[in-house]
Amino acid sequence: MEYIFENTDIVRDYECDIQGIVNNANYQHYMEHSRHLYIIGRGVSFAELHEQGIDVVVARFEIKYKVPLRPCDEYVCRLRPEKQGIRYIFHQAIFRKADNKLCCQAQVDCVATMGGKLISGHPKLDALL
Image (cartoon, rainbow, N blue to C red):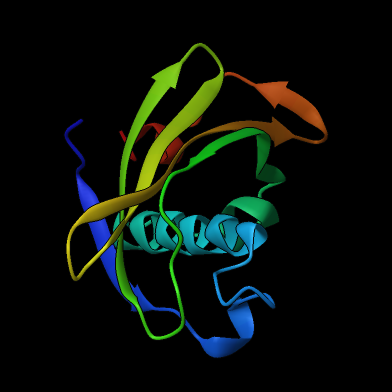
């Protein structure tokens, strides 16, 4: 899969469980942070959209775990967005930087609402594609 954005980060000790691997929920945090960096880099502000009554929310999150990350591992989070109907879909993957091993991959479906009702799009959001 071709990705159009990536960011690098490092695993912090407190993100790991007793088994010494990243707790599964933290991968979602890593991916959310990556999506936000991508969106901010494209000039879109969730705060400004919210002031206009527009909110973007995750409607579905499907993740497949492959290889665990451990404390101090550097990782690269990559993404590719697309739009299908009313959904903004982010295809994301996390790779361990040292050996480029796929740690997990996900499909994150987001939708936009205005005044609590689904909307099919917005020019600023469509610019993310």
